[in-house]
Image 1: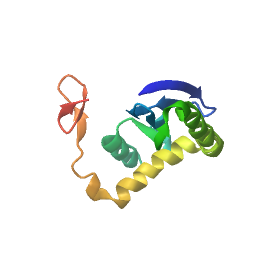
Image 2: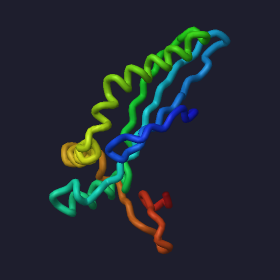
Image 3: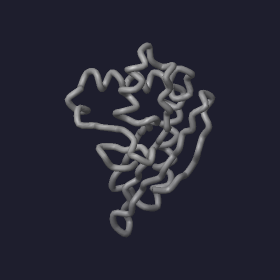
Image 4: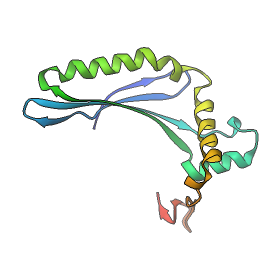
Length: 142
């Protein structure tokens, strides 16, 4: 995957645009746009410190917002314009939402809701620190 662009957002986040396109055959390409925005989990987003600790225990101190859009069987000569079109559509439709001041808190709180609504998905996740102070996930250093 190739980093195409980094866009600083007004809410102090950074949007990264990735091109994950792959050649399928000599004249055919799968065009793949991937957007990532790392969001730091902050204590001030939560009413209860236990909620903060729970989200960090499950997802870690930073949670990536991710968006992927793909088009398969694109004629290779047209793959660049298809990628550009996918990116322009994302910027037009979704970038204003990602730029909002409240986006980081709302995104992180949506992860808390996910934990509360589906606790069975996260019951086996154990985060902690090893004897040298490194973060661990299910006993493995991360």
